[in-house]
Image (cartoon, rainbow, N blue to C red; front, top):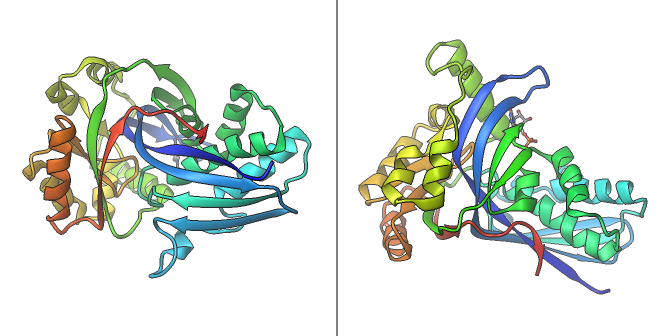
Length: 307
Ligand code: C5P
């Protein structure tokens, strides 16, 4: 076997309710994930030991290279070691990550890479792990990795890793406004804890139900989905990055049905009425001067799979 490639999607949390900080350093979540059509591709080849290269979005100068490390700090490296150890094979592969999903953007780009690597390496090494086995490894790698593997629409509980798939046949169109500089996920959760300690946002003891947003995702119309979108990490992301308020405003002023911060941010996810509206919004937001990149996407799309 010479080369095996897998791709995995970015995600938007259409509902992200964050509970109090747990003793293990994570927050209990009630979330609804939606996989969207922005994909990273991981290509693996036989090798001697592990070697990793990264290209595309967020890599290379100016200053981007550090965002996506090419050593053990990269989740893909850890995914390879974990799969090899669990299957009892050598961790031998040359791995190329081609990024379209920006790093540290709240889009689960690193998780997508790890999920794609699990699928590609399983094929390369012939380890024949079941989807369940891979999901178990994914949960050890990071809270969002199981969803990157699953794709579609799913409820997430626990750290986000306990998933229940949701059947949703409606396709939704979004425009992602990507900022020039990323935000650190732990920093955003930490800021939420500070805002809560200061009594500036609700304490998270009562987590709102995900049902309304799930019902809206299944059947629409857009205005109902727009009204049910919510993200507890938006307030801390805004506190750390005040310019985000302007970016959110730019999206609603451009006519988005709704705009919210994706995950821990700083990406702004703007909901469009349909594909045409998404193209119109893309042009409007590209001209607004508040985003580095603007991408029209749709979802749900499948999780990590061989290509
Ligand atoms: O699971 P992952 O490694 O992606 O999480 C990164 C960081 O985000 C954690 O170390 C933690 O600070 C924060 N986090 C959290 N609660 C979650 C998920 C992540 O506090 N449910």
